[in-house]
Length: 296
Image (cartoon, rainbow, N blue to C red; front, side):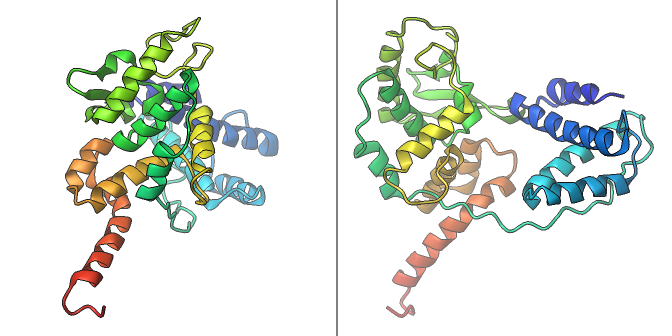
């Protein structure tokens, strides 16, 4: 049983995104390289946990974070689980492995003032890239979609008449997200600029480079970091923080947790509840300022 069989399984049967499949592949290939270099092993199907533990030690020596190491081990554990399920091995060498301890990841959302500053105070260029960039920021904030979902969005997914956009999420799970009028208007403006491009290669996709090719992940990250650096001193400025901001602002305004869950495309409430700690903080502030027994 080869690693390629497992990768095909993730892509074809589990419907994992290309980015996720590449991450799994990279993690497992890293272990293969370690086994080949350090132990002369040509294949990794039958290994003892002690060898995996030595790999973990080498990753720690490389100063990788516990979070990164845990992800790599999770990929390897999934591979051996696949081998066990298909009968290639009898037991999973990582069955009793315990993840390394990690500090709780605190992601601070942008404030409503910071979001308003980006959208109204920054002067976006009135050309193709300027209009595109403004639409990307607006769309991420008003819909809460993921960076990958934005990149893969196709023209056919945008419904101007019903003011909705179809989003293809993780594991090809589809959802319909409403568009606000200002976002719809930005779309119309962008498509007008898009028509002015001399060459369009990836014609079916919404968001393009000036070259006519589809936008890519690092461009979106760089774009967000660049614009928000002008209005925010927060350390982390990324597309995911905008998604976090979208959820937090909705919850702070009294949105129902189940509704936010549907908008975000989460499969369970547990995933959505990650965003509630800021909402709880807002509730505490309101409670403290409004309750008769509170010390003003």
